[in-house]
Image: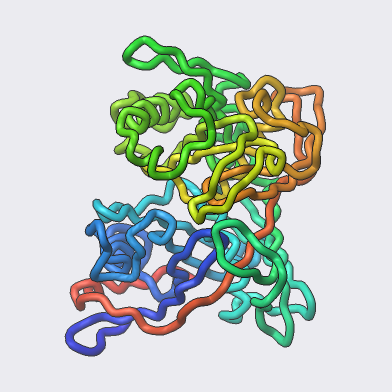
Length: 396
């Protein structure tokens, strides 16, 4: 960081879209060491705490209040160390609980274009060590003449137009936070609500921890539009309770009342339905025959506009676990591509599983998805000079 104009501190910043998310991509060497000064800086860059993030670079939505921090890796099995940060819009709290699959898809292109990874002609494989989950991701990025290729014919629901296809391999992320695909050892657990109702739930950890429940247990049919979900305070209150009690089962909190403070982002919760006709947030009609399963993903208390990349990986893994909530609702259970219906359209996820002789009696040979990414802006961001007072650089 540098102190510059008008008593402000400056920092080089790239705004990049990764999949259906958008965030700030920063070099670790330009930041204070991990800790409170860094978190204050990241929140201020985004413009939090403020519901509109009017005085920063955030977009006032969880999917645009994200940050990737990258550096060359000292690990033999990785090229890049990558830390994901989620900035809470209204509180300014910076969370590092898990990873973001969409932002992850922009890390490879960002690092190639920054010169952190040498580009190979045609396709460059980037080995990314995610420090949040301590798991390895592999990105295959189209490259030409030493730079990332942006143009292409690959389309993803929730992003206008098309771009170059970036293939992401997540097979090494089973048990990302707990070390286990099924942290409780069960394909289905029963969560008892305070009003006495019982909810069947699959507690699953792949890429990020998620809890999967039937939407029908909450009065949903699967064709509900985003406003219907976000305006249903009774539904969201029940979802918060189920998510919080699932956090206890994951071991993230000792009591469900403390879950929002201890682990506000994880687990994510998916309201699952069998394939159903519905309209996307952009008004496109989707037929039940176009998908294998339908999901409304709840992230940080509201409906995700599409589906988190890590959530899609966890959902795909859960779909191959016999008896799980997702497995029970999924058609084409043996297909090598799972088609997930979400609020913005249908997302394909590659999943190849086989049975094993030891618990959880399943292993994955392929688990991944494709995304597009685009560098939108690079330049200098400014924050009040007080954020340059502790400029102890991160180790590189």
